[in-house]
Image (cartoon, rainbow, N blue to C red; front, side, top):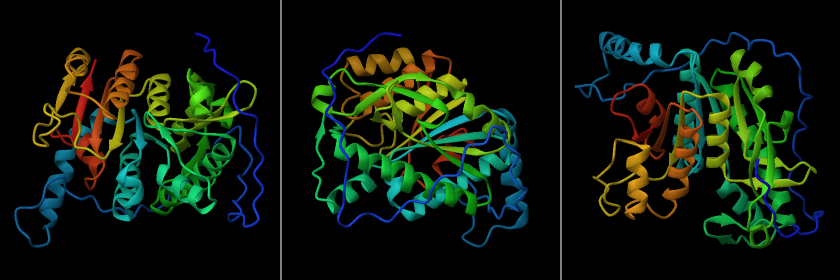
Amino acid sequence: MSTVTSNPPPKPFSLSLSNPLKPLTPKSPSLLRFPPPKNHRHRLSINAAVSPPSPDTPSPDYRFEILSESLPFIQKFRGKTIVVKYGGAAMTSPELKASVVTDLVLLACVGLRPILVHGGGPDINRYLKQLDIPAEFRDGLRVTDAATMEIVSMVLVGKVNKNLVSLINAAGATAVGLSGHDGRLLTARPVPNSDQLGFVGEVARVDPSVLRPLVGSGYIPVIASVAADEAGQAYNINADTVAGELAAALGAEKLILLTDVAGILEDREDVGSLVKEIDIKGVKKMIEDGRVGGGMIPKVKCCIRSLAQGVKTASIIDGRRQHSLLHEIMSDEGAGTMITG
């Protein structure tokens, strides 16, 4: 493991508020053994990936046909680990959030092993504004001083994470909320330019030991993208990076990044030029030619790194589309761009 040297991070900050945020519910102590989730009756309605030929309510035969067509995909992915990075418009739209939660629960019901990794930029920005702490970005990364880091941890771990866990539980599955701190799941280190970005980190090490019994027992882990270094200092880590490193460490079948774009475009100015499937060599060539740029570059590099470490496929999909996860996994059409090794 290479050592990253950088200027010392800012002095730790203790935040004292005259008008504090609502208190967070304390987390229950960790368990060493995980009993299987209770056998809830799942109230799920499986929606077709395509619209029925008639505007009328689909007949039972039509629904059975859709279920039958899903069988090969269920057989292909049953028992396989799927790591999903949740972000973008899907986090801010109630309809899209409900769609993602329903998709995750349905996938778990038919035997897949989904793991959800999330950030929470919009919520962080809202609380920073409430506390009169300016939000600053450099090269797409949040400048994270000690005050901001405290808010990031509070919002991601205490609010966003627990909200997602509650939604998944209410939909009929059983979720467990974690962060990189828990069980030493992730060990962080500062990014090389930490003198400019503050407490922004990258993943130094992954120990998935705490995840394996949870996933094996049928729970859905929901992971906030914060972690600590060896000394216990907390860092804000890009959620795409966390998802990619976790997928590699778990030997996942598939990594899926939900985004606010259709996927990788052959022509960035033409939304109709979606690249449905491409290999590592081809996507590297697109970067060299300048056809992949901006915020898409780190996402593509995250996918390439995970594929190089053993993940079977990585997809960048349109999270603005209803049931995009089901479209990606349960159809040949997909919902974005799939990158293969």
